[in-house]
Image (cartoon, rainbow, N blue to C red):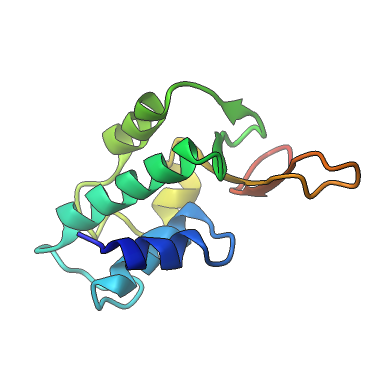
Length: 130
C-alpha cells in the first residue's frame, strides 16, 4: 500500500488523467508505464480506488462521463463504478482501456480560480462535447 507521503505526492502534483494516476501509482511500486507485475496488481488497484475516494471526499475532483456531463452520486458508489469495470490484469489495464472502456474520468476542481472567484473545472478525459 502507498504511504501517506506517496499519496500526497500524487494528490498534490500536476492535474493528471486517471490513466496517469494509475501509472504514477505503478511508479511508486518501482514499475515503468506498461510494465506488468501480477504480484502488486490488486494492491495498486486498491491504492487507485482509495486515492479516487480521497480526492472525491476532499472535493478536489468530480467524475465526468464521455459526453461532457458530471456523474453524481456518493463517493462509495462512484468508486465502486470504477472498481466493477476495472481490468483484471496489467495486460488489460493499458492506455486503450482508459479511453474506450473506462466509465468516466477525472474532472479537477480548481476552487475559486475563476474570474469572479468561482470554481473552474479542468476536464481530463476524452469527451465528445468538451
